[in-house]
Length: 263
DNA sequence: AATATTGTTCAGCA
DNA sequence: GTGCTGAACAATAT
Image (cartoon, rainbow, N blue to C red):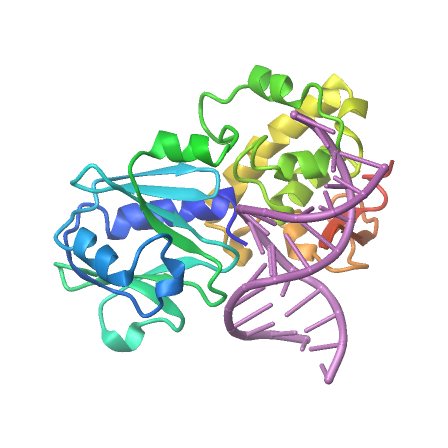
């Protein structure tokens, strides 16, 4: 479920491990992860490069190289990173492995191969081409921007939050989480929300991201009142004691509390 | 053995 | 154009 907080945790992990390291070469056990290039071409373009800086936009991670080319990673539904030294520590489902000059390796792991790695010319162009909305965790994303973006939207608040063209980075799990703490029924139409409710969504969104990133998105570190620990029909709500309900909506499961998120 | 899961993209429809 | 729905993609868990 790599959404904005997960990718931010990956970015920080990358910074602690592979940043500023030089690449000896790259192994590509699975070419399908690479977008628009062969493993040969990828290996040639990566060899000898040093990872210079990282940026995140929504669920996308961008890594600057020495050359005027940027490495792009998208984690799909099951992607993750693993830094290790010994061969027997190599994780299963390693799809691309960066061999670093300090003897360590960074593996891009993805059991269900829906992740993507690409080399792109320009990050801003990429964001524009994919029509990604602003990153809601960025410091210059303010309440007035959020208000502006949500005005005129007629769909449900949950679908709108998850729309990458509106806001980049929120998926199924975190949209539920944000609305749970905002005490709003997920399928309320955006134009039926009061300004106060909308403000609450904005504030809870930042708060949820902060908490999740602080917890390094590890289950045992999350605050006890997080809904994502209770994604099961019939669980007890940690906020009000009500019942957690599961509802299907266009193929995706939504969880919410029947009592404090009623409509 | 059938179903759910997850993000993105795309097709079809109102 | 906007919003909604479902399918496809891959592989694993229950």
